[in-house]
Image 1 (cartoon, rainbow, N blue to C red):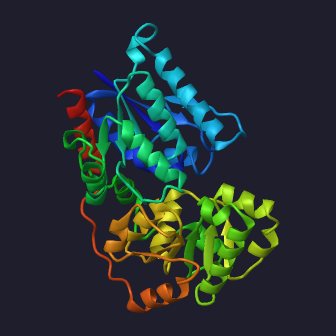
Image 2: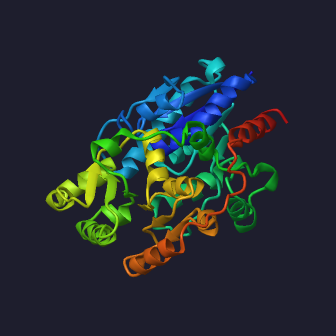
Image 3: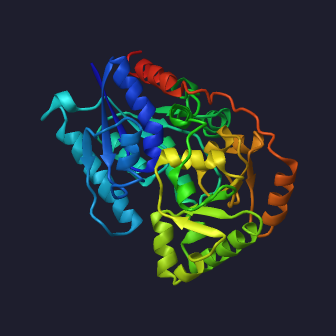
Length: 371
């Protein structure tokens, strides 16, 4: 029986890995294990979401010490994943040596695991391969490019991502399979139209816009946060904002002495990160979404909500083509938002967002391992 290790470290990872993990478990043709790299501490962003998606415990866990630069952390993760693989190697515990490692997305843990696996002679499949913002100032963009450059199997979620890999970068088409958006598998599994998040009653909210920000370009300096605050204040003149705050965003608000400005406003309701099921239903009930997150762009598109992305680019152009997503900047956000809201929601379905991606991925993995 073939052995597959799935790597997950952050909330978006679990959203993408959970349906594949459960699908492979059910199919039974391989032994599948979930390796949790504790890039973030336990809680709503990691362990709690895994449990809510049907993964009560992890098969293996790599614990990281706090602190250190991003580059140092990258090296530590790679070293620990390499140790994990080689300690299960043919000379020690051959029954645990993986035949394939699957990494999702573009987080540091995915890049580190890819490097570690390839150095140990284990092939890598990249789930959500080929996404490109063409902005190499983004750490995630560099991670995506590096992962794809040494992966053995590419599993792009969209035709645009497929084209980036095959025509833009020359990846072998026999090792590049269009599978669709696996995050939609999870969303379709948990979404219920009648579900009402408790936080709406706690904050006495009915009509609201939902916002979430964590990109370094928007939250890693006092100037960027001051600029973001100005955008939120202007947008909220007609739409009260609900803002679940990412841990690093909250830490920066406090570090730059902006806590008083961001809190205590009737028009801006801050809260801690919330369970994924609640977050999805908040998107569905919102007037619109204001974000810098890649995943939220997709979730809003599937739930037929307008999304305004405070970035110069997106690696998910299909959300723009579908009519949901609009890129905004400090210079044009008021006019873009006003125009889009006046036009109303005319959002199209996106191909292969059908809840069957995990099954297609599982078949690709089986074909790769058992040609």
